[in-house]
Length: 160
Image (cartoon, rainbow, N blue to C red; front, side, top):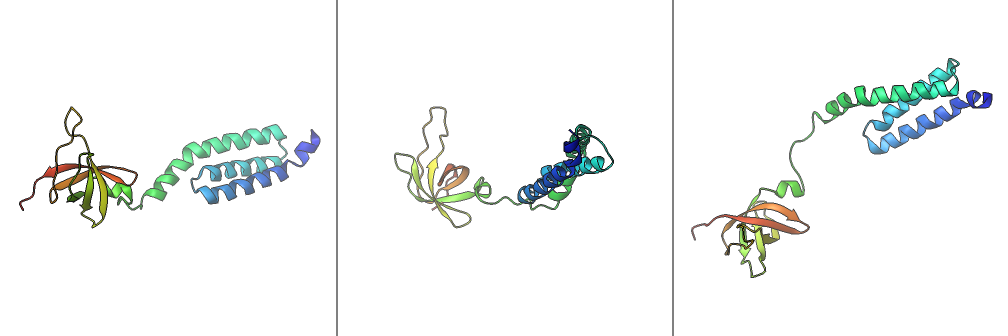
């Protein structure tokens, strides 16, 4: 067991290096806290603690850092984030206009406010599960995206 305590510093250095590399790939502050905990284990080993004491120091320090330091760091990191929705999330709630009549299968084409034309399907709007007939030029609202299909509901008729 004396050999384990003598060379534990090598294991701590390897752990610190591995945790820092994984943290650079994940950017979530979890592995950074584990790296600091391992640093605490390394320092306690340099002061002569046995390997089990080093392990306890590393575990306690890692847990404290995960629960006390990580949440404020994450809040500070996300504070200046862009609140704008993007990709599919930006399409939900967007208005559109019917381009191609919805057939019996409930599918048609809709041109959205951003200029994109999407294959669309009408969402059931009554309790029986049937869709309301809809013609070109009518306004719709995107309620969901399923794959490459926009699920829409009519919002009102336009004067033609």
